[in-house]
Image: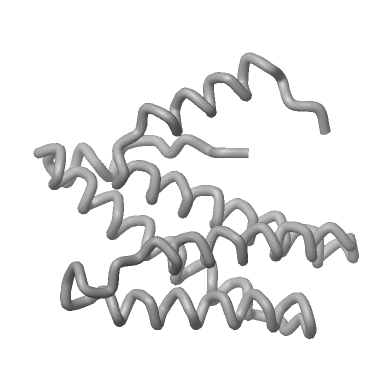
Length: 139
């Protein structure tokens, strides 16, 4: 599918000018999208599910690799959760199982909401305003 150059430029600018916390939220947005696309492809018997799952794995690997486990007390638990998600996505490529992607989607959605709240707190935005904020869909 060809990408509109203006849209591609907008997305590149949105990522380039985003705060670190916002970039994490954007990664979660794309991770969620990849999992949704993989599920849709699997439901149709489309082999592209593998590509979406592999991209999702790359995102999780990036999140895991950039996590400083010494930065805060919950970082080790978050690293364990990322490792779990990575294992589940790899397992889904190797042997799809009904319900697995729904469970990973729920975890990703919850993590995204938490990071979005953290981002809002860093910016001093009230929680209600942050919840209504629209996601920038990357890809």
